[in-house]
Length: 125
Image (cartoon, rainbow, N blue to C red; front, side):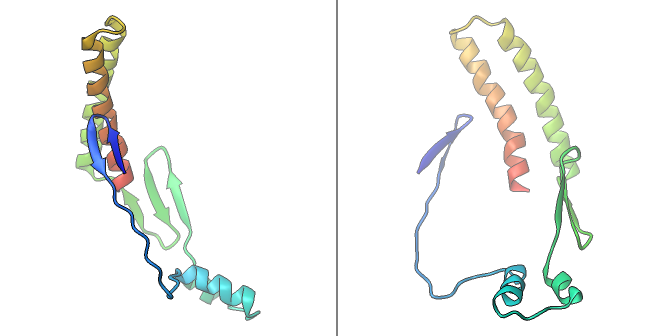
């Protein structure tokens, strides 16, 4: 599969391989033990294998129930902020440009590249 994102091309490969081993997370195993075998795990045992996740949309960070926080680096946040300022400038220029012109297409490509950086970094982290 080949896809384009903001003028940049990516190639993705996917393959399928059969395996007899079924991989499960610890929380899934605890759930199956409690449900299928009718064994009652204590609350301490369940909390040891279960993990709660909370996403803060405003600060764009993730916190887990064991106290860890995951957020973007300060350098990446600064780069995103600078690209947003550039994107606003390109948006204003694009609003004043004539529809269908080649300069408008160029501005749209630049704007897409500015927005794609922030989306890519948020997905990556």
